[in-house]
Image (tube, rainbow, N blue to C red; front, side):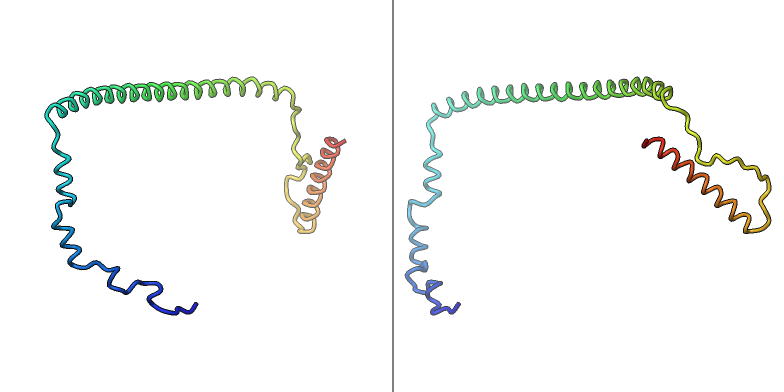
Length: 157
């Protein structure tokens, strides 16, 4: 974007700027902030005593309300804490009793499982040739696979 003139965006004329005359005029005038503030602070004595009494009463009621709310929140927090500990103890007791009951029931229902490797170790000593050792390992693997497949077909059938 091409800017046609600088004065389009920033005002460079002296009419928009503050002059020292304007500053001194504002400072010397009697309408400045400090004089207005001092005028507002002059309150009659009777109004001041009424404000103090009302202020004391309102402060006492406010503090009483605060104490009441604090005591109520403390009581609520204490009851919640007690309920949480009670619930925690109940769940632990319920879990313990449920485990004891269920563990007995499931142990009676389930049939004992046999291990996959059902081939007895007949050979007390290993064969001396590596070929025989490999054949023995392959035989164990085949039997374990056959037993696993048999169990799978029993379950899915």
